[in-house]
Length: 476
Image 1: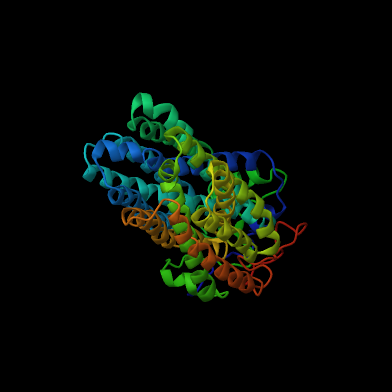
Image 2: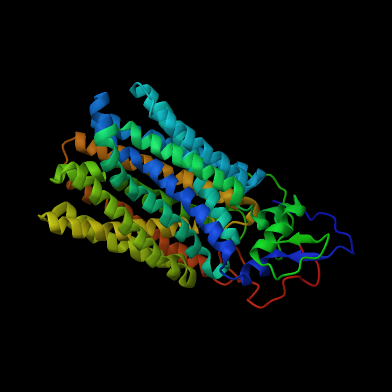
């Protein structure tokens, strides 16, 4: 793919936005950015996960088999697969902010409509449409946050907003216990939909557009100075400046999937990310969708099962935080420790005669390692791609992972209908973290060969302290 530079007048000052981002201080701008991004991912997690907490009520009201219930979980994931690709394409073409706003509006409206469904066919259709917009939001938020984060905090920043997703998933348990017994399963979907529409207003008012995206696309240059003043109020911005992203050329080349396999060893990196993400999503979505029901079948009450599922989501958020700083310092290979430690936990649950206390302890540990590893994979899923295609890079990785996310709930339903015990499903799913370990170790080795300053490299340029305004035009 060829890059092209837009014409530049000799008297037009060139302003590199990269040093501003690399040298920025954590302050009001960061707090606002992370607060809104965190709320979007929180509601994304809540809206996707709430169906697992409402699942037993839906199963009863609509007389669904285990396979039908698993299929209802899967069809939402099909929607996220389509949405991850489609909305990411819009994000790379029209900008991160408007695409995030459309995604939040979409899953808010269809959550409300889902509560009004009258039969299984309507449930399936509305869950598909809800998933489309849920899937579109995450890669766009990752792209936006990573483009405002200094390289030294890149993975940590994505993990921070993804903690919102984990806590949103966890909130489904307490909210379901509080609302469903008195107001029916419809109440939790109405709550999620209305809250999403409230957050839409915050997105429109406070979320900034990515200055890296605007600069590399060389569009709407007049929008960049106000955002730069929010990021670094003390950095002077020359009038009529031409904004650039380091040494990267202006890039208006239309995105194609082949772009994800060109340059900087992407032909190796992209498949490694996709397959690792697929394996991670398979086991995470198995756990998140079936955990409340599996906990009941193992012997916990309905409320205790939902609370335990919520606690394991919180434990997963802890795992994400624990691994994040190691990724920024030591690279993607560090993530492999998480699935490696998850394997014995799954085997113990599957084979050992655990009492309630032992089961809770091992299940919590398993979720720390599984969801922690999942968050690690998410944090690197878009960082290897240049800003012009970063949302599409993350969106395609997310959509490929949804094939695993569809497999997880469906496979568990089939295994249960086939006579396997609830505990037995745990040892079957241990194969996925084993595969992740191999893939992530290899990815870490490839990442270490990337030169300094390369997208996704362990060392980024420019170093802190460099000038914000380059002396001359960077070469293509």
